[in-house]
Image 1 (spheres, rainbow, N blue to C red):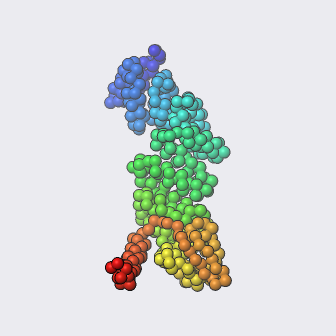
Image 2: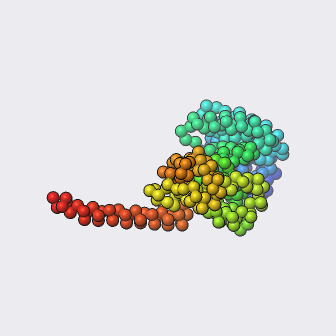
Image 3: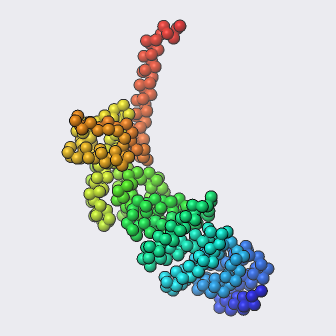
Length: 379
């Protein structure tokens, strides 16, 4: 038994407020009885209390490391992360976390190793070491791919830091995907209202300015979007305007674009994107048997200049938003498929009307067959 531990705990107890001194007696009792699971639970609760901030580092270095190999390694890293937050500088925190990652780099604790390695990547990102961050994230991803299952906190930390990395690189599509995966791994109650608002804002901007994201379905259905209220409500409305290809709403909301530097910088791209959204919405509103459209019709409904219509259709086809062909001689686009997307109530009502029309046509066809084929039915 380490004879220094009782002295350490006694010193810590004497320095603690009177109303929390009983905790140190509990720690010593559980440690002496080798009740590692119960001791870990007590330490996690202790580290989660704000009052423990000043004691986390000495507790981890002197007390917890003395039995580190006897407790759940993922929870060991959780305690290490709480302790690391008290390091005075980013460089000291980096060294501390690298040691923690090395400590759990064993065949049976690779999930904990990934958790710690991602924490190392977080600090490297703070220090603007993008190459080092990427190396740690790639290493973590390769290990994660080998697991059949892993604690959600591990995946959540990986996706969070991966999203932050891609955001720093202005890779908006990759940021968007990883940020949504991060949100899928957590309960929104874990985030503060301000964190939720910031996440929703950044995701919305990324979705709008990315040149590869044309379907916002996952974001539109996510409850985090409801945090865009008051001064940010226009951004939510803009997303829905893009989703339904609403040029009128876009023109009304376009005045807000200059309030965000990224949106302002990608103004032309946004205009092209809303034209594509208007085109797909125009096709979607038509029944499948009526999707041979003249360039003039498309120009009227999308407000795009007639000489740009062919290029617009070709772009939609190349992006996989539509499938079909173009008759350049007769200036007709024949569309046989449009990319599915989340529908608002007006779009659902339009679909309901088309289903009612289809039902009516089927009934009329049935009545016609019954009338014309009476002799056949009788036979």
